[in-house]
Length: 330
Image (cartoon, rainbow, N blue to C red; front, side, top):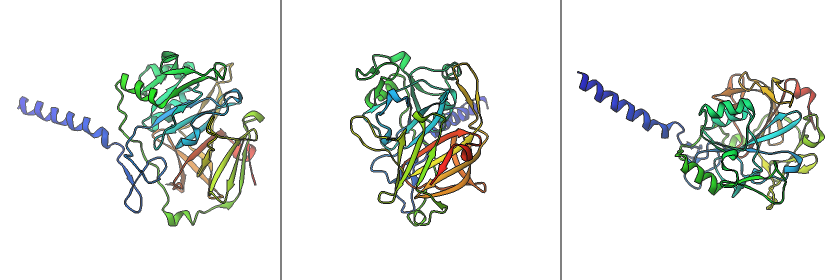
C-alpha cells in the first residue's frame, strides 16, 4: 500500500511539474491562427517566448529611450514626486537594446509578475528590495551586473545611462537557470469585424497632466494608420538611434489610490482594488472600469473583460479623480 501511494505521489508531482508549460497556452484568433498573447497579432514564429519586463527611465535626461516602440504593453506610473517611469513588457518582439534601465518599485514588480515576466531593473526602493530578495520574481538586477550584462553608455550621464541588450538578457537568464519558454497570460482581442464597430465618443486627442510639464503626455490619433502617436512635453516618443515611433492601438487610463510614503516622494499605489478608467481605441473613448487579474490590469465593463484592438497597448496610471482633473479630451 505504501509503495503504491509513493508511486502515485511521484506521478502526481511529475504531472504537476509538467503543467507549467500549459499555464499560458497559445492563443488563436477567429481564423484559427496562433496569435501573440499580449498583442493579439498573428504570430510569425512560436508564441511561447517568456515575457521580459524592463524598468525604463523616463527622466528628461534619459530621453529618447531605446526599444519602447517594440514593447507590447507599457505602463506609465509615478515613481517618486511627479516623475513617471515605464514598465515595458516585451513578448512578441524584442529590441536589440533596452533602456536606459532604472530602479524598481514594488508595484512595478507585481505588475511584471502578472505576465510571468523576467523582470529587468537597476536598483530598488526599500519596498522593492524586500520583494526581490524574497524570490518573488525571476530577475536581473543591474546592481549585480553593472559593467557586465548591463553597460554604461558614454553619451549619457549616470544614473540615466544603464543599458542591457537582448542577448545579455538571455545570457543572464541562462546563467540563472530561468525558463524562457513559458509564454504569457493572454488578453482578449477583437475580431476584424469588431474592429470596425468600436463603440464610444469620438476624440482625436487625450492630454494627461502629471503636474509637471516635463512629464505631461499627449496622445494623438492618426486616421491613416489607425494608431495613436505619443508625445512627452510636446516631443514625439521615438526610439533612440532608429527614430522608430511609438504607435499605439489601445490606451488605457486608470485611476488608482496614491499615497506618498517617504521624504523622497515615493508612493504606495493601489493596483488591486480596481476603479474608473478611460479606454481609447480607433479614435473613440469608452468610459469603463479596470480590475486586477492576478496582477495584470484588465479593462472591464459591466463585469466583463473589454476586448482590445490587436496591437500595442499603453496603460497610464493616475491618482484618484484624475480622469476629471488631469485628463483633457479633444
